[in-house]
Image (cartoon, rainbow, N blue to C red; front, side, top):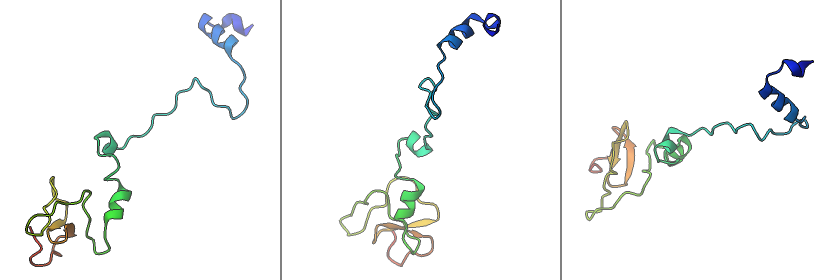
Length: 109
């Protein structure tokens, strides 16, 4: 007799077990944990996701900043706060990041 050899806890589980129809979801199983990106974990949302960054890139390699830069009294754009983009220079006239070495004369900060 298989029930006589089972532990008391197993007897309760075995007696409460009901055969579920094929393809049914067991409500007692936990949902797998949702994968959280590092950006979301630290409060940046998806502003810096690969898709959003690629959408801000222009054909010449320039990158539009995440937030609209402030326009100064002299007509140039203030450089966004934070660190500089790797391999980029700030174009104060157009208000975008341009690849190093491609900054037109007079467009710097």
